Length: 119
Length: 88
Image (cartoon, rainbow over all chains, first blue to last red; front, side, top):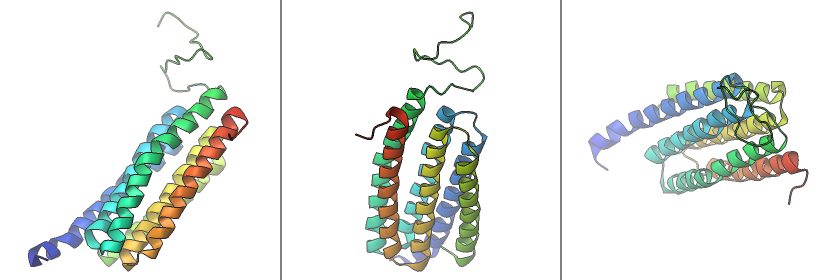
């Protein structure tokens, strides 16, 4: 490998790890901060998943081939399954009739019609 | 990855794990709890990936892959059972 590149790569891995930490912190904070399940899904599915992807990228930067293949496999698998998990959780919340607690939220499902039509 | 970054990241991920566990316990709605459990498992997967990266050992990556598979199936089953009272 190029000696200059091998000098830079650990710092790139550090940057990716810190980016992943930041994104996951935002995601976990969103889970405890958001008012209802539908808005919590934004933080939980997207942010935490992107944090794990960033960790996988960091291990692909420094690791050997066995780690790189598995990192790609984990990233691809999470890329496929995270939207399905989010969809299933949102569907469960909708079927159980959870209300949207966000101020100004407009629930367009037929189960919970909006109280005021003037808005 | 440097040693100090690994230790800081590991400590911070442990804090996030504790916060996620508190969210599983404290949240009111069951769908929110399923969501927080999914988040918790994803944090654990991230922790295992980080550990595999620091130790240069691919066995932890296998564990992370299996854990993400199990988390997906668990979330699917829990959410379907909660939503429509039947899994299949």
